[in-house]
Amino acid sequence: MIRRAIAAGLALALGACATTPDVAAPARPDAKSYAVTQDAMGHVDAALARAAAGGKRVLVVFGANWCHDSTALVGWLATPRFAALVAERYELVFVNVGLPQTGDGHNLAVAGRFGLEEMKGTPALLVLTPEGEPVNLDTAASWRNAASRSEDAIFAELSALADQPAP
Image (tube, rainbow, N blue to C red; front, side, top):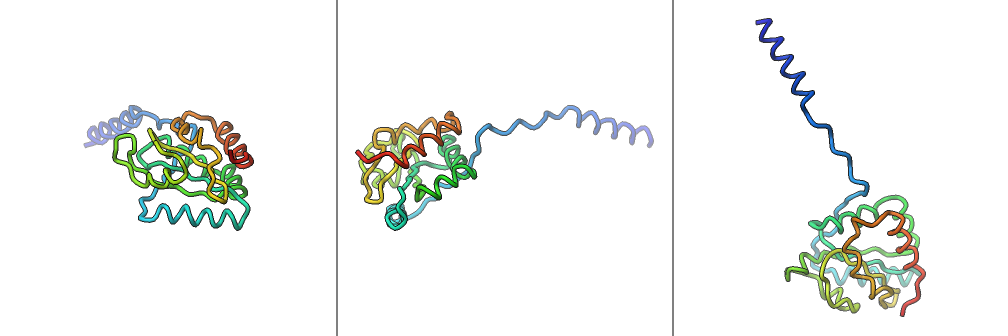
């Protein structure tokens, strides 16, 4: 009986030693905010109204919760550093677009309304004036590598877009 108890204890101890350590967390935060909604256009319109009243820009992030670049961008936006910038300069709206690159997209009319006619991947990030004029139409679709961008690079670009004049 004692031998069995010792053997069981030894097996547990060896088993604990054989477990692999936890993998380090990614260098970027991840979060999910791309809710499927019936009225994405209404959410953007409400953000435009708030932006006009508050003298801000609208930050529309088109993405999906399945996409690691989309969730990485949401994760950065949720950190205190980015949250302060967004609160001061933007009205933020997340628009779930599904899988536009495979033909299974939705809410693409929101992107099209502001001149973003083609979405080959996610996320896309569009900055609008309170009047609904796109500020960064030429770079809106370039955010598909958001998970690879550094925190400082993302912050610098969002800071610059907050002040960039509309074309």
